[in-house]
Amino acid sequence: MTHSPPRRTMLAASSIALFAALASGGVLAQAFPAKPISLVVPFPPGGTTDVLARALAERLAPALGQPVIVENKPGAGATIGADHVVKAKADGHVLLVGAVHHTIASSVFKKLPYDFQKDLAPITTIAMVPNVLVVNANTPAKNVNELVALLKAKPDQASYGSNGNGTAQHLIGTQFQGMTGTKVTHIPYKGSGPLATDLLGGQILMSFDTITPVLPHIKAGKLRPLAVTTATRSAALPDVPTLAEAGLAGFNIGTWFGVLAPAATPRDVVARLNAEMVKIIKSPEFVKRMDDIGAQPVGNKADEMARQIKEETEKFAALVKAGNVTVE
Image 1: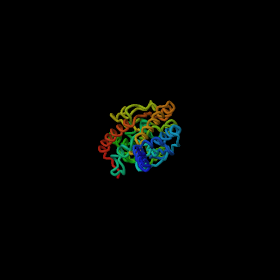
Image 2 (image 1 turned 120 degrees about the vertical axis):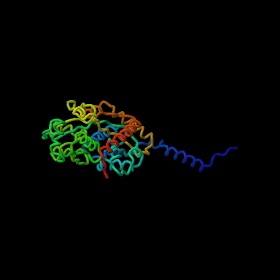
Image 3 (image 1 turned 90 degrees about the vertical axis):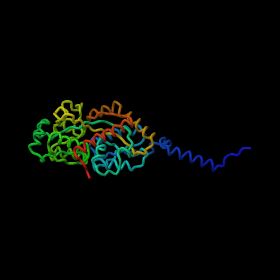
């Protein structure tokens, strides 16, 4: 004669199985997304990070069946927004739109409340965007050589703006000074919006911002592009030389933008997000949108993005050390 297992034992076994499934992320992945998703942008509205995040969010919402909200959390060289995501619940509903700035911040800031490589899980790179050296259209300098001559004639009297201490623009400005023997005062801003306002108003002489936020002002004739900072010219500004072509051999810094989740986010949730985002990034409509703003769409695998972050963190650590760039 056989006996059925007691009901209490069956319930306990079911609970254990359910707990194991939850722990592995299986049930979570099936329910994902269960609520609106936040894309945290660590800069104010109007900059490249914000533009890319909104372009992605617009197409990601219908793909996931939930609203995708862009949440701006600027400050401290993009580290405030990153810290917010690191501390968020690791379920895929709060994501960071990160950038090359975060790989630089790892070396520039003496104290960070997080480890960018350990505390965040890469999902995919959205796009690569060249930086461009621009001056106000009223500036007499028509090319890089004339700008360098102008800066040397008035040392310490000119200033350049960036998106904050420890950002790519900050480091590009530091390297530019080192290679040209000039001295230019660094003015950090919280993002491209306020930076562009002061550049257009003549409060600062120049900037090394990404192409996206300055392209409309270049087309309107209000800003003059002198050179792009990448090794090759930009399709958005084909007549503008590279800094290497302008005489600064070996100059090659661009800005990537991508999406990351808290490190403990279940792998199947990261995989689902990667699949949906890559599909969007590689779609003809998104590619056309990126072309229009001077961005080069990427859409890579999570491990490829992780490798990119590791390599760039090491590269910028060497540049930061050589330029003695630190932030308390």
